[in-house]
Length: 526
Image (cartoon, rainbow, N blue to C red; front, side, top):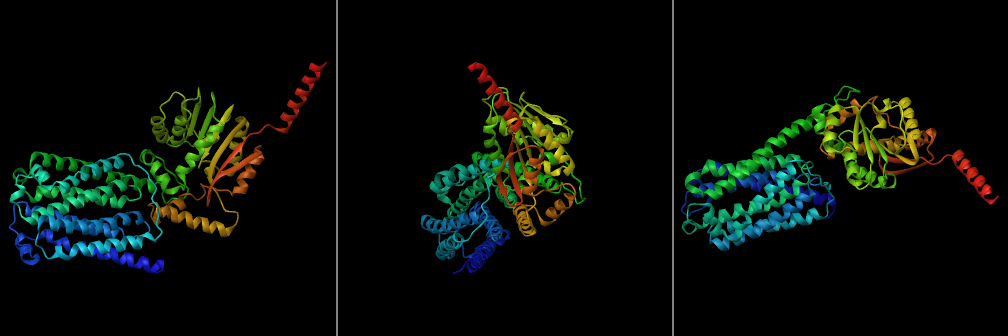
């Protein structure tokens, strides 16, 4: 079976799961009399029966949405693996619950085996399909909140292991008096909740990649726990400990919903920060607050570049060194350098940034007497002196060519011998064929990271006349023109490249030192 056929079958299987789950959702709106008549459930209902049944139906509604998300099989490959285990697990779990509770229900006879087969088949199909591996990236507040929520929901596993004991803790109705159907449904929603905690924890470190699904999870969780209050008389049905548990989860849900929607509003501004007006940039306070998130969407290998720069700095930063970061933005690079070289004495870090909101954020990140931020354009720095390392990450590319060479000359003149200049740029390919390929791949990269087509187009329009990339050869030639002789690339991704240039002693200096040493030796011999 070839890959294309497997993909089609997998999508069909996910559609089948979505439809199957959806068929269970509408029952949430029916009375128990209707449910009793059409579903063949003949157990005597308790006050909790309708509550538990509707909560189960609500879960099926969420899983319908969950399976619809997964139809994008390349993006959600990792989650589809969890999905296959969920489906298979719930199939087997339903059968065990049937035996444990003694429920007499026609669907309980065949459903477990159907779900077990479907889950196994999904796993088989998904295993051979290549997908996107989402990078781990924690977001402030949201990642922590999702992890706490995952831990709280995982507590439902106790309901599975010792159902009678936990039932007595949660509800005022005695476990021994309720019907097998109540026990079965209680076990089902406990199993759903416990397994969902695993998915939530997986997403917690990848929320940016699964942003829309994360929003759906928070909304569902809020509605699910709200259902216990809406459909049941909580003062009569629930014990104080369970009420406290529900309130705690709802607080987490409300905080998460408020934050994630507020964040998306601001992120939308950041993703649209580059307006459709050609050549216009705006780094105001709102944009600056979410710049770190945006830059990861639009710049490939951003974190890898940061890591590489920090590691390379070991060769150039020593006691009493001076380090410049040109275009320091929110101070992320300086913050990492500060941590890396914390044991070295009197290392000074100077960040140059024209946006005051960026500088304000950077100062909070780098609260040290050894760090200084200057609000100015990098071309306005007239002189560098005795510098060991200069960084320029994605900054020089925005300078006009006639200014770029002047800045490079000042950097070269200001470096100590053995000092280094590290910069990362967007570059042009050496020929038109590769230029087209690299640009297409770059557009794909941005869209895979959450930018829509309109945002990509608008950003391209805004960069007209502002971002002027050179080829790798042209960048190296420019470095050579100002005096650098020792140069190399340390990273490259299609149309992005990182270059390091080291200031070596000039030939005149070497000859002068050789002459002085020879003259000194002659005098000693005399």
